Image 1 (cartoon, rainbow over the protein chains, first blue to last red):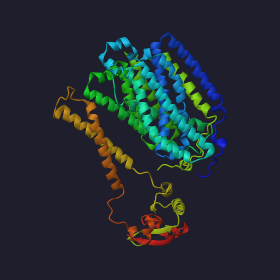
Image 2: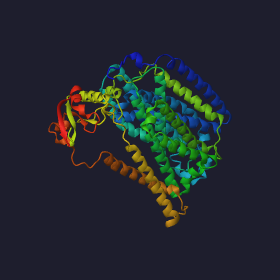
Image 3: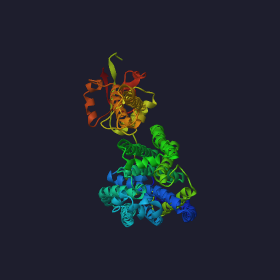
Image 4: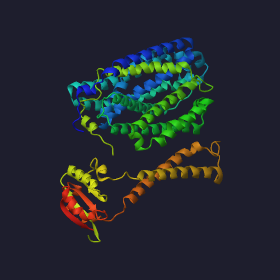
Length: 399
Length: 175
């Protein structure tokens, strides 16, 4: 185990994954984004929601990845050094998400009821929220959140990649220090970001736990995505004896744990609102339990929590790459459904109503997103070869 | 061998020697032996051929029991034994039962974990025969030991085998 060949060729992606695949994904992304744009032009009201939904999914991936990197440094995690480059690369897409946020700024009127000044004037609740929920402040906050995230992700990515060439352990120590306040800033900006962009879709409603609810789902999803990407990279012959079943097992454990955490938070939010029965709060669930949305809610309770809780509890499931893969795909699908259930009832009020832009926006943003992900690996090694805790990670074993 | 013999104890020089000795013993078909070291050694579970503990299943039973007890008790109390309408909600409000159900599940699972562990480890055990050995005291600081127990079918040749796999300070331990 000790004499693993860390030859640069073996930890540097080459060929199809960094040459043809990014081009292919960029192509797919461009085509589908163009189709989405046509829909946006025809029926902006519905298509904007589809766009926001897909945007939120990929934003949650990048922010979840930022969280994983921060928590690795914060806890001085030794086991995960060899898998860190995948979340590091995912989080760097936050800049892309910043650019993809611009169409939302043009669709504020279609998305957010509180931008309709006439309605606000007639609505005492919205009036009292106006000092916070107004277009100018909304844009300022968005700018602030994205600058924080771009600053944080660049700081950690640059530190980590510069260590590959200069091999200074002090970088790890510095980033550990930065991860402390970084985590605080991340938690606040994430929470307030989703308050702005998702919770304010139902402007009367509020839930202080909503940020954590989104965060829990995002973390499950990014862990599952990391697993799948690592499996793909391994399939192309890289990292074979570097990322082992032990690392997958640990990703699986975290995935499982955060999935239970998601259920806990989701229920807590529902439970308190159900108990208190205050109209301002129950409005959200009345809307989200209407018609076929109720079925979706039940599918989420069973599919996002019940089934994975029982099926994926065993260590054998997490230690078998096939079942691990199924687990990851299942949880990603459930996260997509969860976001769909949170966002889309605001436009499809009578029940679930899947439209073409729902799919084209997802493929469009997804194509660009993962194209950029693989493209970045052209100049980035697959593992941080000079991290002081790398040998600990290589030797890692579960008990 | 005498009736009241616990087994044969042998000392090894390093964790590495201990691991390879355990592997060799298992290879020779020994079953009832155990390795003792001051700290956990990676791969020792496989080397000694210890099966994964069944504790997980015991905990699962405990959790399931707690779950049904918690949910059942609340359902029975609020729908038939002591009907009280709380804040205008139906008598059978399963949402309200979740926290207590969850807590009881955790409590039962925790009890089953602790007492299951006690039972599987045969605790409380007031003394262990190996503690009679003066030499064995170093197991808490720097000693690595293997003891083949007298219940092993191949126990008769245990002494020679332990020397063969590199053990020293061979000692017979009384029950």
